[in-house]
Structures are given as structure tokens and as C-alpha cells.
Length: 201
Image 1 (cartoon, rainbow, N blue to C red):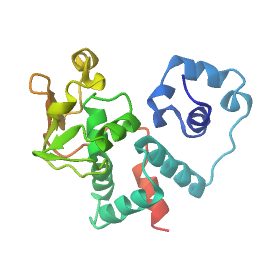
Image 2: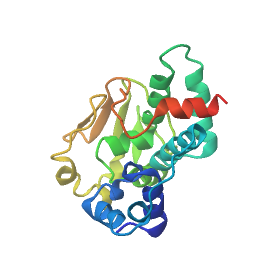
Image 3: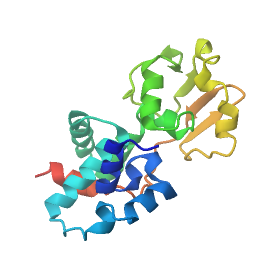
Image 4: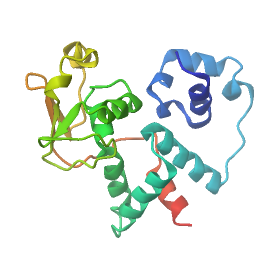
């Protein structure tokens, strides 16, 4: 069930913000006299569009305004056409996002909690910082003491039909994942360039 605050956010920003909004129930609800179905949305200004895209990133990745601003600053150090790609890499390379992308959690929020509770080891070091930046070659393991936890009890069933993005892999027999490459942007839900333009004002 989608909470009312999340439902409102999804109606405003689109179903891609939260996984639970990407269902037929959400589509049905928004078409039955909801805000999207009842009124024709006003045309947004360029600034309004950029603001919406910024909010999409904040809510979908579960990051603060300061974190988002810092990611933009780091990406902006890359001159030329690679800025948006670097920005995407910064967002996707977060440890909590990688846990989510490997299929080990149902949402980024859940992945953030799992990391905070110390369930993962990166390169033989326990990491409890969700924003920890991963790099190519990093090994992510489920901590030995956490393997018996309920959240990992049916992991094989959870990920049997799941295909992680090409930049990540997960070996079920070893209960560990690996960062194979830099994340490549295949996300059509977010306009990264609009967000970069917002912060360049």
C-alpha cells in the first residue's frame, strides 16, 4: 500500500519516483478523478521543469538538497559533454543504490537502512554510510553475522529472476556482489541536464 505522502509525490513527479507507484493500482487511482485525471496540468516554465526534475532525483534516490548540490558540483568539474554522465555516476555509485540495484532490497530506502545497520562489508571493511562511493572492482559482501537475519532469509527467491544492471554482479553462492564498471545511464525517467542547468543559474 502506498502512503498518502508518497502517493501525492508520485502524482506530482511521476511513478518513477517510488517503486510502489509503478503499479497498475497507482495508474488506476490517478485516472479516477485524481489530481492528474481531474485537471489538465498547467504548462510549466523552464524553471518549473528544472525544479520538478531536481525533486525527482531527490525523492527517488532519497538524498538531501545538500547532497544533490554536492553531486552536481563534483560532476561540474568535468568539462564538456561528460558532465551529465559523471552526475549519473555519482548518484548510482552510492552503496545504498548498489544494494538496491543488485536486488537485495525492495527500495532504496530499505537499502539505506540495511547499510546503516551494518549488514554490508566493502573490500573487507564494514561500511555503515549509505552514501559511500563505490568504484570499479569493489567487492560488496553481506556480513557473516547478517546472513542469518530475516531480511536475507529468502534472498535466493527474491533475486532468482532479477537481472542487475551490467555494471553490477551478484554471486549468490558467495553472497557477494562486485562493481564491474562505471554506471551507464539508461534512465529515461530523469532529465539530468535539466538539473545541471538548474544549479548553473
